[in-house]
Length: 165
Image (cartoon, rainbow, N blue to C red; front, top):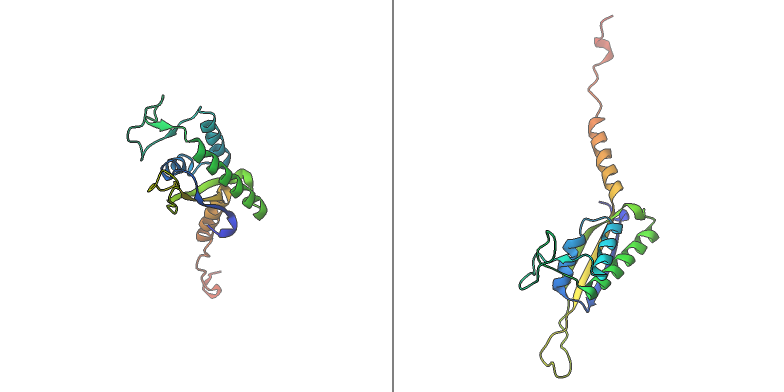
């Protein structure tokens, strides 16, 4: 996919949990932008639980098919801010906001600044986040255009002198 059909937003050393960020990332990856925002808003009001698939040790079960789940409020707020920033970047590029989806969201461990005071020897939670939004219809149209180009290869023409009249 060409860069002009993508919009990105990055957050460095955000004061949120890496584990919750990874779970939220898998919760919204591949979703339409509006659907992803709606799901995260549901997490903020504690109506939709984020399924804990990787970091689920000693987690309580939630109603429905998700098994273990949680409501990570701080991480959700930070990710919503980054989604809004990526959406504004897409608007500045002139992309169609209705066709955007979360093509990539990556959470990595940030720098481990030490806490001050009595909690000597504890690292602060820091996370790097990167969100990439793409236009979904553009992707489909490019694939269709590639197929048409393959189909439109000119057939070999016989020289005109070989025709019988």
